[in-house]
Length: 95
Image 1 (cartoon, rainbow, N blue to C red):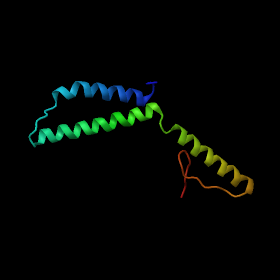
Image 2 (image 1 turned 90 degrees about the vertical axis):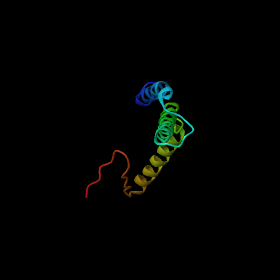
Image 3 (image 1 turned 60 degrees about the horizontal axis):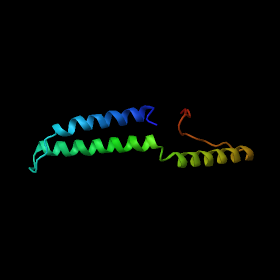
Image 4 (image 1 turned 45 degrees about the vertical axis):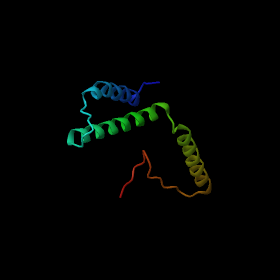
């Protein structure tokens, strides 16, 4: 489940969070140190949630459905004899 780059990044981010939170200066005063701590915690939450989402493959069904629709469009265009231009991932575009 945690294999791959997103699983490794998730484990590293959680480890970093576990070691860093006790050392962050959190007070009720409005100063630069507290602002940095809040910003750091928000960024850590974003990193953890993004990697968790990729580990769980939340978007997998949508990606598969989109790929199937793209292939159907390509196949119907090939049957009609018209070329379909795709400048998506993996295609080469020359000017």
